[in-house]
Image (cartoon, rainbow, N blue to C red; front, side, top):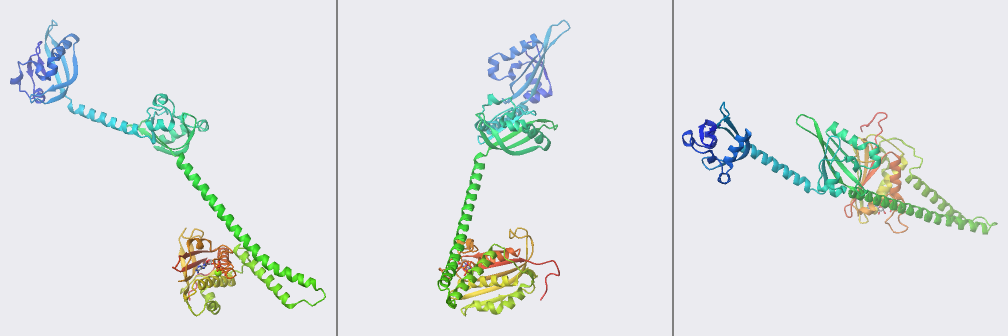
Amino acid sequence: MYMLSPEGIVNSWNAGAQRFKGYTAEEIIGQHFSKFYPAEDQESGKPSRALRIAAEQGKYEEEGWRVHKNGRRFWASVVLDPIRDDAGQLIGFAKITRDVTERRQAQEALRASEERFRLLVQGVTDYAIYMLSPSGQVTNWNQGAQRIKGYTENEVLGTSFSRFYTPEDQEAGIPAAALRKAADDGRTEMEGWRVRKDGTRFWAHVIIDAIRNDMGDLIGFAKITRDITERMETARALEQAREALFQAQKMDAIGKLTGGIAHDFNNLLAVIVSGLERLKSRPDDAPNPKVLASMERAANRASSLTEQLLAFARKQPLKRERHNLNELLRTFDPVLQQVTDRTVRVHFNLAATLGEVMVDATQFEVAILNLMTNSRDAMPKGGNLTVSTEEVILRPGEIPSLPAGRYAKVTVSDDGDGMTAEVAARAFEPFFTTKPVGEGTGMGLSQVFGFVKQSDGDLTIHSAPGQGTSISVYLPVDNSLESGKAE
Ligand SMILES: Nc1ncnc2c1ncn2[C@@H]1O[C@H](COP(=O)(O)OP(=O)(O)OP(=O)(O)O)[C@@H](O)[C@H]1O
Ligand SMILES: [Mg+2]
């Protein structure tokens, strides 16, 4: 703060002035104040203009560059007041100068950062990013918004964002509800149909954030919209393809099954029909016992085929009783040993304790026989066949079809040929066999499958070509009475 004569000569000087401008009082008193202006301002007569304006208008205010004694410029806020005596005669000026360089720098930085941010948001084209007033009027608009929604900034500023919604959604009050939810929860996220300027629809993923000032007042909303139509359509197409594939596989399997049944029954019926014909053609002779025997065999075979089919369909009558599978396996042992020839070594690896399960003992034996026969067939040059038992506790989802809990697990494994993934995937289908015609019916594993499923269990199959095969049967431990009989 210092004083000037009416002509602009410095005639008082304070400590603050010395600090800002670098001059001591001795150095500057008596000098013209234009010294503080940059050369170009001095040339254009800016200092005397300032005095004139102050004298005429009673005050002069400006912000501008000033020069320190050391030559450094600083940005100053300047107020110049004329001082008059009682008669109104101008006797000088009071000058207050503030160094506002820092404030100016801060403003500049803020402006630059806002500009950078604006450019960033503006440059994003994959997302519509824009702001809404608290009542839902669009207050700015980026390129992405223009690209996705089709409106230019001019068309859309100041209009309600509800125009982007379908008429149904507008009717149902969805836009306002979305803002309410964002205001209440701070943010809302949703997917839905939105409408472009040209009337076409797109599937949008939308996030609305409520924007509040430091006082917590709602000052608007930030909205980010992404067009995910393509992603949604890809997902839908994939789902359809999967469905179609599943359908095709199902039809294929049903075709195989029907064909298999028709073929087998046809052969068996042919034997019976031709037998009947022979009997009919000689009504007076005693029936040929050979013909009768072959007819009977065919009929029995047909009936056992029906049983196997019923087993697969999980429709066979089961006599379920409480059994310890270890004990069942021990009683079957003589039969099981016969399955294999001398080149195959059979190992039993039975758990010390095993919870009891509700099974049909005969069907269980048939299932184990089927599994062991398959293993033997897979080891034409001999090998090891292991039957093991174990009690396990399944976690939820560990085997998707089974609830969590205690299970008796029986595993039949071999170090034979193994299966390709394709064979393993179809091995349980009735009539599916890789064995030469006449050797396998393809009914073995389908019996195992049907029996296990009908006994509330499930099975897993681990196999790879050359790596052997291991098939495990899980049957739920019966908790109804005393459980887990120790042996
Ligand atoms: N332990 C195994 N090792 C390798 N392949 C196996 C094994 N078990 C089953 N398979 C494959 O699964 C197919 C189907 O087995 P499944 O027991 O249902 O019928 P099959 O043994 O061919 O005939 P069937 O049991 O009626 O005599 C077999 O043909 C074979 O390709
Ligand atoms: Mg078999």
